[in-house]
Length: 640
Image (tube, rainbow, N blue to C red; front, side, top):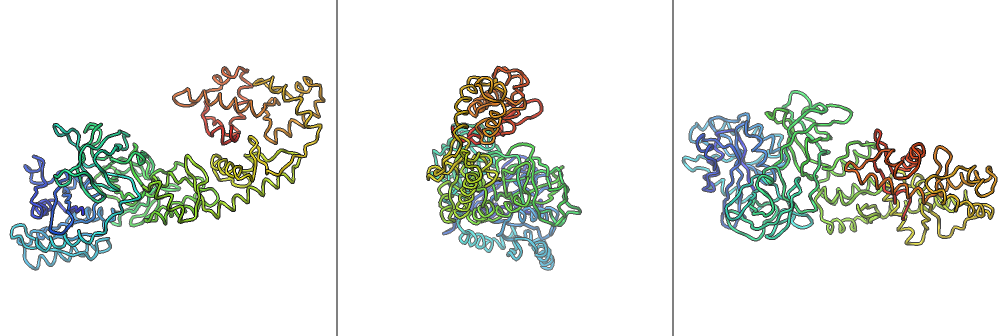
């Protein structure tokens, strides 16, 4: 069990920890000279038949709240310390607000220095403390009176801590990947880099390969110490020191995480549930600059509130935090926000989506997603997410990473919830019943197209998606169609989809004309031909040929540019590949029309007309005078 102290400066927090553990947590010379805690201090208490209790002693001075915040992340229990002579003070209130916002559910209030005051004063302070605890997660916790001078109250306090440690519900070990919040790094001669902190999830063993996040530095665990004793592993809910190889102390200090490689995913936008303290005099306005504290990390952020609104004091609502630089963070992490000068705690809450999108087009759907991610139990969150994505499916890989769920655990949950994988890389999932309905809708649309246009080879892939699953990602839809093709329910003919039983009723004259003009179109290549030029080259009437060409455009066999030139599907695919080649050759992954003109070998006007076609298809997207890749070639044209 990890226990943190909380309370005003000079109320006896460090003295209390020393009396319990025998360790002076004020390790810095400046702390001992000034007689106040500046940084975090650590100690352990081992009692008979009781799990080891780890203490995090935090500074009480208002100037060092940032250090206090780094110490209270991941704790199980709090000792709220109030001196009987001073009573409740400003940092008592702020520290209590912080542990409440962080969701700490268990603790004890300790009245120190009771030997210095009268019985009446002790009773008065008890009343103050009880009043402060009301309306918090710690309402109703026990209050113990202690004196470091007389040692009164310490047997009772030890008993309460021992009982809490024995009754603490073991944290889940399986189904998650390792995650460790670093609060200190230093170097030891002969050993190298050592980091200390709290294990947030799973376990670590000697020899494990991990990643420093958000920096992305790969390291290996050389050794593990708990309570100054070398061990082979450390588990969730424990404090430990890890001797790691592959990084300097400068690159793995406080604010970093040590995680399993699969969890390394830096982010700069968080969708959160945010509560503004009721003690604030006004609400939190849109784009307010704050200091965000999550884990042991501190970063400057802006609070984005939908429609530029305000979150009233005492209220809880959804907001997006836009960070000044990337951090490591996951769903369910608790956080604190302080004002721009880092002098006052404004509020805090829970991270819902650590990989938030910048723009949200479907706001009602996004509200439903955030409500789903608000579930504290992962299986309930997964069930809710599946329910609000019946038509589209959703990215299970990102969901699993966000909530730190292993692939094995996620697969088991999906099976329990009657869901299936509909696409891979990334993995998209959908409820079986929803998948069945979508499949039926797709087949009905293909059959309908065959009935209305029996002469056509099939329905264009893009048109089919717009009719049957307009909000589903193109790559996911294509993957779904491939599975139907494997089941022999449909056939995929490039960008055309047909039922396996369909026989085109195209007339013989059309087929003969198409056979004549195909070689001419292929010979023309990227320069293409107009209907008139094509008719002359094959000896056909322009009007008759033009009608065929436009039917082929509708079917997706040909593509027309502004100057009425026609390109084959194969030509457009090759032109798309050239655009991709240009983009990937540039560090910014963009290219301009002149570069495309040169690589294709056509005049500027035709190059621009071709790029306009690629823009309409979604292969490229115009950004100012340049273009960038937008969709994959396969998602537009089908399997190559």
